[in-house]
Image 1 (cartoon, rainbow, N blue to C red):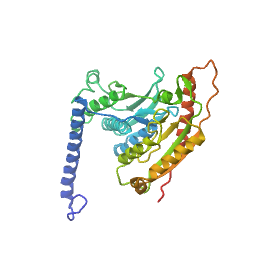
Image 2: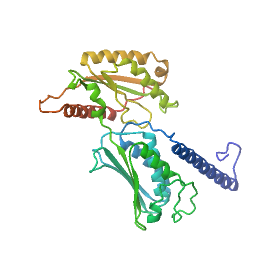
Image 3: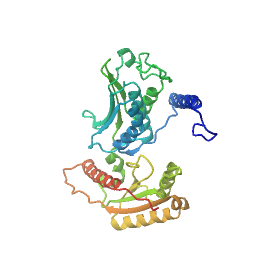
Image 4: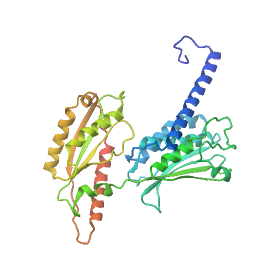
Length: 355
């Protein structure tokens, strides 16, 4: 009706319709939060971790909330330490947490204030990355800080007294961070703004690859990297990309040897597009055989051919010279670092649509 599909809308009608529209959206958000909180309480909330670039998720969250911030004349910026490697987390869940924190920060910050989201490595814990959202709002009292992550809690001294909600956003965020093995907390003083901080685990490629690149405690003789780049045939993509992704992974699994090869967790993708990477315990010639097998498998899928374009490539990994004094773990870490560099270089390239 607001779009005029049922006829011309006069100003008074538009005002009422917009009120209804806002109320419906608010009610929908409340129901969604309530269902999410109920799943969390019953242990049914799940996460699907993959290797992601935290900077990509942060930029996506900032882009989603930028218009809201501009409407209040609030500056919204992001800063990401470029040294951060892949993190191992569910990109959709991390985006949910970030959106929640940014939305709160904007709502509880007065006009002409600022909100800053940052990501950095933890100096005292090399296995986690730290993400923070800082605002210039009125701050949180010590009493509220002790309760703010509790289910249904709402700060009675909120700067936005007109805001109606169930007080579930921070509770849900806490549960999602916990499922990733991280922690979340708030640092705040009245009249000095607030900083919400949470941690996420870094991905250890070395630990993941050890069973593949070693055999009976020794490094395998040859290793190769096979990359499969998959992109939508048409942009924008109108189908269900998650289903396409799962279908693709199911097609890849029969193409490798489970005890000698491994499909690495999805790396760096936060939207439509996928780049499965396979570590194969073989030389370049053997990698070409595996590459051919994968291409034939993908070509046989009518579903993929109708919706995607894909490109395969393989490269033999140059194994480090093994010093008798070096531990196997150290050598595996060197190989993992090389694979990370090669994979990041691949992800920086965009696979153009065939259309």
